[in-house]
Length: 389
Image: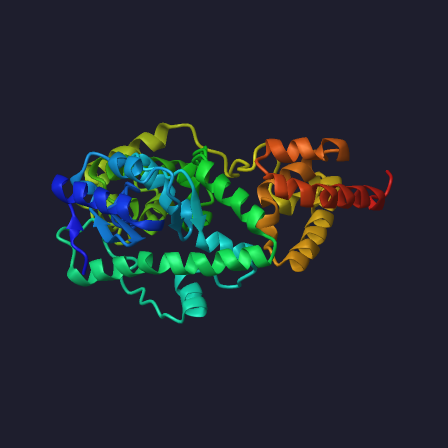
C-alpha cells in the first residue's frame, strides 16, 4: 500500500520522483459526493512509470499547484476527465495535455466505457468497485480504501497504450485529440435559473403555493448545507421537502408532526425550516411550468405543435446523424451535442451559416467537417417535406 502524501516533506519527495519518472501520468480523484456539499477532491492518486504510485491528501495542503508545476508538459491520463478536472482546477492543478480513456472508448464505439468494463475487456483485470461511493472525507482513511484507490491509476498507462493504438488504426487520433483538448478547456456549466425545480418528486405538487414552500425549503436547506459542508440530501431528503410542501403546514407544531419530514437536521433546525415556510406563505408564487433550460425554446415534446418546421428539421437531422453514428461507430451525442442540434433546428439555421453556428456553439473542427453537410441536407429535406400552408 502506498503511503499517504500529507506533509511538505512527503510532497517534495513526490515531486522529485514524478519528475524522474517516465511516460504519462495516470491520475484520479476521490470526492465525497453524497456526504459533503463541496465537490472538492479529498484524495488525488497519481502513477508514473519508474516513479511509482502516490496517494495525495489535498486537505493537508493549500492547493496542489506545486504538483501542477512539477508535471508541466507531461500528459495526464484520466478516465472520464470531465468528472475530475473541476475539483483539480479548484485546487490549482490543471494539466497541459490529457488522454481520456473513457472518451477514447466512446469514440471507438465501445458499448460499455466504465473503467471496470474497459479494464476487464482490454487488460483482463477485474476491478472491485466496493469503495467507489464511500465517504472519502473520512480521516484517517482505512487501509483497504487506499489500496482500492491506488489500483485504478496503476492500470491507466497500459489502458491508454492499447486505446491509442486502436485510435490510430481507426483513423480517429485527430478526433480524439480535439475532444481531449475540448474537455480540458471546457468551462463549468452555467447554474440553472431555478435549481430547486430539480427536487425529486416535485411533480406531485400541483399548486403554486406548494411550489413556493418547496422553493423556500430548498433554499434554506442549500444555505445550511453550504455552511456546514453536508450534502443537501443528508440534511433533509428531497422527499421530506416535497411532503412538507404538499401538506402546507400552518404552524411549527404541524411541521413537527409530519412523520415524512426527516433528515439529519430536520428536527434540530426546526425553527429554520419553519421560518422558510412562513416566508413562503407571503412570497410571490412561482409558475407551475418550469422555465425552458435550453434557452428560448420549449421542450422537444411541444415542438410539433409550437414549431412544426423545427420539429421536422430536428427529427430529420437525428435520423441522418444516427446513420453517421452507425457508420463511424461514434455515439450520436459525441458527433454533435444534442443541445446544439436542438438550437440549430429551432432557429432553422441556413446551410451557408451552419459552419459558423456550429463553431459558435462549441463544435470541434472534426465535428463541423463531418456533420455540417449532414445537418444541412437534413434541414433541406425537412423543409421540402413540410406542407405549404
